[in-house]
Length: 389
Image 1 (tube, rainbow, N blue to C red):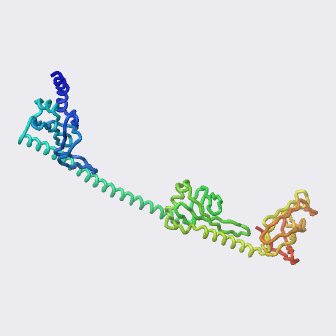
Image 2: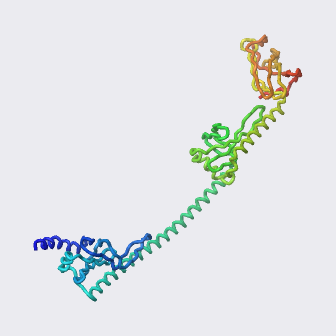
Image 3: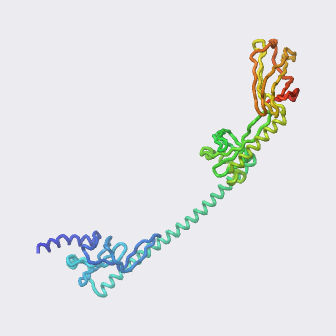
């Protein structure tokens, strides 16, 4: 008797708390649990209805609306279902004596069950409708936003295209601003830093461009380079504006990067440069020369490049020194000894000589060059036959 009283004392508050939505029923309190109807949310946010579902536990109780003392079934409404809990004997005795819970059977019980199910159906039908309207409104808003964004993008794109069109009218697509950002050539390993480069194409993150070499006898040759576009250059506003404005002209395909082809052109341009030099100066030219009469006697030095197939044995350089009114103050010649082979250069220097020039001497003219070859033949150069770098 004392044990039963203790159990009742512990469970009566529990019953009252259950009526106030605070407990749950699991295997400790009941032998089985089943949802007459149960609503669960799917991946799209809609509640789907299932019937006669076995449950591990019944929780989130909104109300206990009936008890059938014959079957020991407790009927509860949760926040998402209409459930039956078959109580164990001990708990059945407690709920049987709870006057706050209607004890129903037959038609009355059936009506109570249907009423709760109907209310739950109405509740979740309403929630699903709200969800449908929300999704419909969201889709409509997304479409409206998308249309507005498309219009805005179209307007911005049109403005950009006008800006690019104006830019193209005043710029050449080859002349690409590079803001003195260093580029390393993958072909020759040379580092190039220029404010602007003559670009012949861009392939993804690689830029192909040209510089010029040579310069002797006012002749130049083209050097083709290809370099990775560094991040600093890619983000440079002048560079990016130019590339976008001339995108159709500058963008090329992968075949444009063929190093065998690029090396072929580099060799071709260099060969043509030397051929042009030989045509312009078939017997060679002075790469540099200078003179001085600081200590009264004349000093002289020069470097000569031989562009002739014959090897030079001796080179005689004849000269005259004049003052500002073209009076000859001194004349003579210096003789350099070779050999100097084809396509090679050599230098000669006289730090002192037997020649003296007056103090008013201001300039020297090279008047004649005699080239003596290893085979004994000679070539005399005068006037414009004498070439200077």
